[in-house]
Image (cartoon, rainbow, N blue to C red; front, side, top):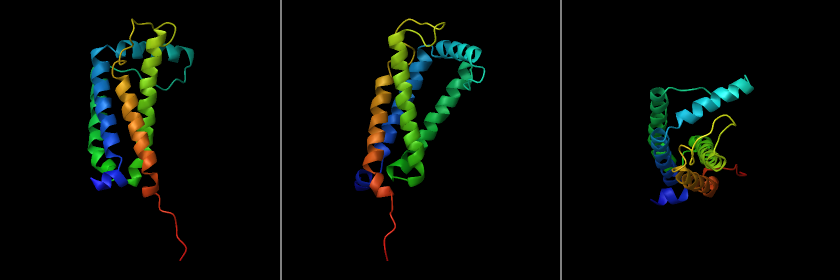
Length: 156
C-alpha cells in the first residue's frame, strides 16, 4: 500500500481500464460501428492516405476485449511504478482522454463528418465521463510519481 502511494500509478491505471471496459460495452451496445465505418469511408474518399481501418463487429469487439485484458494484465506493473510502463501509460491516458473528448464533441455536433449524422447522443457518449475521470486520475498519478522513477546521477 505504501509503495502505491510513493511510486505506483496502479489505481489510476486500473480505474482507466475499468472505464475502457465500460466504454467498449457502451460502444458495442449503441451501434458505434454504424457511425465509425461510414466516417472512415468518407475520410478516405476525401483524403486517400487516411490510415484508419474499417471493422466488422466481431473482429472489432475481440480486438478491444484483448486490449482491455492486456491493460488489466499490466495493472500489477503499474502498481509497482514500472519505469518501462510510464510512456505507455501516458499514451494510454491521453488516447482515452481524447477518445472521450471526441464522443462528447460529436454528441454536441450531431455528426462526425457532414455526411455521417446520428441521433444524439453519439454512440459511446455515456461512458465518456468515466474515460475523462480515469485519464485524469492516471495522468495525475504519473505526474505525482515522476520523481520516484527518475534517478539523476550523483557526484561521487
